[in-house]
Length: 293
Image 1 (cartoon, one colour):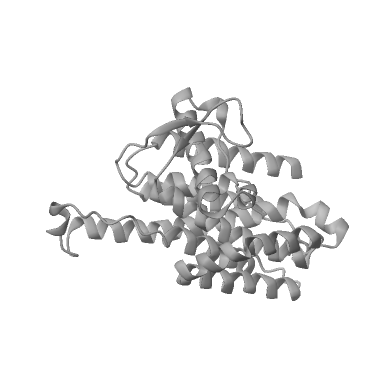
Image 2 (cartoon, rainbow, N blue to C red):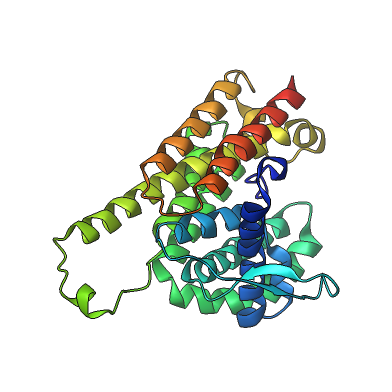
């Protein structure tokens, strides 16, 4: 289902593209360093957007290094290391990927799902202990989706909400590293800094919800013809009027994503984030809707 949150490379200057690629490779390296090589295959651009957004809530500049990797043994690629947001995004990717593999086991990709879930089982158990509230919320809402699928539900309110709640938990669950400086110790919980953190948390939850709904509906529209032919579940198939009104709903979700990002206190990478929202997501939306017409 993931893979829709992309950038428009042609609209980014070289320095911004280096930074974006640094986040991408940073997430990949973080997974490899802490969980081994196989889980790196689950990397998607959607999770890079999570790392980018969370990292951009502080003003500290990122340091880019050039390194080789298994996939690029000759050319060195930009990598951002030791960023808490990158490590968190890597962890969330594996939690989501594990559930995606479990879902594959129930559908037409049983072999891939079985192999993938076995390979990620150890990492998932470790992360479920580290992030119990997030993993529980993800499990509960994935189970809701599974039940709606069994019921052949045509309710977009219920299906989109369930996946929206999955990403809500992922986006709002991030805890920035604590500032242990002497000045920070003098700041109490009634400070503007604390209020700003709590406000960002609520906005991140709204962003995750809207993004999850957008991704779910985009995927349903993108796969509509294929699913109808194969008999795979798709909520649009079971709607009384199938795809009627879907375009407006998708663009509404896209607008909600933009509004949430505008409310966040973004400290850096503004041009990259704008590119994702206004060029990447919008272009992807236009392409899927255009394909459908």
